[in-house]
Length: 587
Image (cartoon, rainbow, N blue to C red; front, side, top):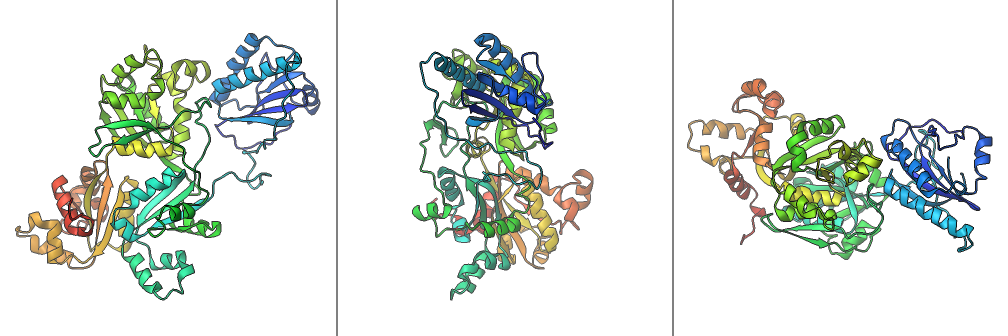
């Protein structure tokens, strides 16, 4: 059974085969797994001989370093002993694929094999006719670089959407994004930016002959737009869950973020076209879409050059109280070693309602009441994690939802390593989808706004660097405008120092050129922005906060590159004055 050397992925694919009266189960990777209950196949003749087995043949094709693969060995041994079907069950086919399971999902593999053996027994006894299976394509996901797969690429096609400035100013961005997610699409990347003239002309080249196109270009280049990369949703089952359908639980939050109601989310119609969906829901005037793949690839390279190499995702993770108290540092060290970036974290004592929502999957268990009591007995640690393929990687790292399954099938998972006595569940939680993650992050880390200013002396190149600092720190630039801050405009930001002797020096500095005024949004935005800016004096910043913006770009106390609100009241007042168009007439 010759096999090419290839890059091995951690995720294990499982495939069920059948050849005439034969069935088989295969784990896709490299075949290196001898065992006393397995026959070793390392030649074509042995492979041909194995094809003649009667009954079900299980082929274990795995990589020795892979923990989930190793964990399959005791499962096969257990099945061999319990089923006691030496004539029908063989552990070592190339033939017709009859079913497919993604992920090293031991409970599901266990059930699949048992079901197939029951089927073989009935066929042998003449109680049923062997079913006719539809062909399922088996794609070699580990093909060497440059080798094309013979099957269609399953990567969902992307669309580029631009939420136009008037919609951003009207605060419609969040509503549009929520509608897109509800329709089953996934937002792969997003950014707020003022488009350049060339970017507008490239994206809207099809309407360049319109008589008012030049006015449109001016409109698009003067204010902030919201750019999205959108793909079709992934319908694969979660790695550790059985395939029995469960209603997705959606947390609906009140305005003060204190109350929530768990309700089942109904499956909406699946839309093939983002443009078609927006037109049907009367949002196409607010958001323009490009779906031509050639153009989409060009615009992804323009707006998100790293997207094709990295799939950065954000999820919510939670350390339950028992684990937080005993092993917090150990878990955080593992999170760091595994390449996760902790964007935000906070300790929080969950209410009973919050605990019940997060533990919904255990509500029919005998220990549910005890679990809720433990979950509300002390602080949990909520984390926002980010990394490439964050959702799936975290699921694989923490393991299944119960300690019993973790210890039996995935002993190297965090669930097994950090089990707490008396609690049979995984002491780590993670979002079950990117859509859920966005809702959970919004709830546990409610966004706050602050006003930020990049001063006139900062060069265009330095401005771009500062904007990069801002985005890497997890801020969302909700609004942005370039403006000459004359005395009237400056007072909207610096009102608390207008009676100081040095205020005239501030006005003179601001009059030297255009400033960039922004609304930054993030949990704990005010203090985080002040921390990112650093001390007022750039020389002091270089000593006390060498990675801060003022340490890198400040020239003096007056020309220290950036400014920000000091507290919630000041932020609110400055934002209302500088961005009057966002304030409703009757709040």
